[in-house]
Length: 443
Image 1 (cartoon, rainbow, N blue to C red):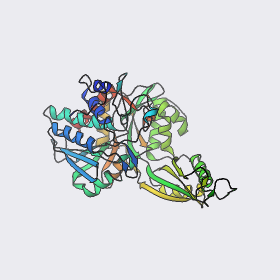
Image 2: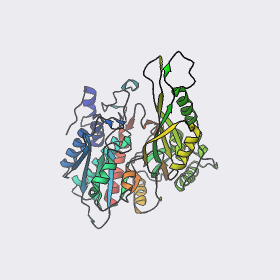
Image 3: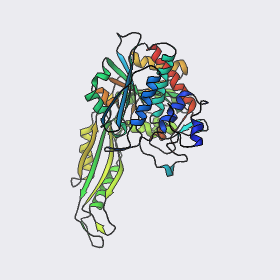
Image 4: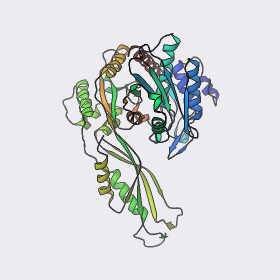
């Protein structure tokens, strides 16, 4: 099932000299599954078919669901040794955010291997984990073994648009895919961070709520040369600046309190200030600080159609992430900040999640990491972004972030989510595959 390499360099990356998990991840990167949001996407069909072919090659029977043209989801079920135990879902998404190739030092869709790292859009979010899931299951089946319990493998479309055309449709229209499952594992957890000169792992047990909004300012159209105080762009710009510069207060949850206690223990710090403790994590600081508070980041501006015409409307997209359960209060605060003359339209809204850092699956994930990296602490954390665990939660399924990666201290891993020159170490992928294989054999 080779991908279709675009250059000699890519063909080298796909060579059998690479571990299988890296070859699969590189192949997946070469499918440009860019998702621009709002239904504007290249589609996941070819990537889903590649995954389905791989699943067939290891003896599984994939099922496809494409409720919208080219927005393809694929699933397979692996029989476990103990069918009386609840099934476990391992899921990933096949879409990626767009990449501006001119800003990258490599082609973002070539799957280039350089300096022991795999480069490309999706290397971190989340074709790396897709490959780790596939090869971990392959390890078990090729050895003639079964996992401890039934494993449901699901690869979704449209996660980068909040799952509106992906997991949200799957759980409503194909709930039977997840029959008997009570827990799920996906992205953005299980990776290592550096706390001072020590290593620790973050295990994701919650995620903030997602509220994507559109701000709209209205004014009066006119000639660009006029004295014109009723300018929609000026009004919008003032609102966007006010919101973007708002310093939201710290508000801790059970999970973030546990995170801070863990950071204090690992760092040896006596500081009680959450932001100061986040600083002990180096490159991960901004990622962690976002979990203590609401964030409201302007991401897109739209206004006007000609240099000398003042438009009558101007719009901005704002990515709002709130702590679970605080969405309505945050929206009220946003209206106060931008002013009553700015319209707020909710484009996508999804729930936040937070589950206890306890139970047999948590114990098993921690133990699996411990067997492959002994003596390294594991700390719970709340993800500032979101995953398809939100959709699965509507079926009563408890989701965690556990894509285990042992990373070098000098790699700004969290900064590569949706960033430029996204890349992941090959040996980290191999580590993650082994940890997941271990988990599936034992849990």
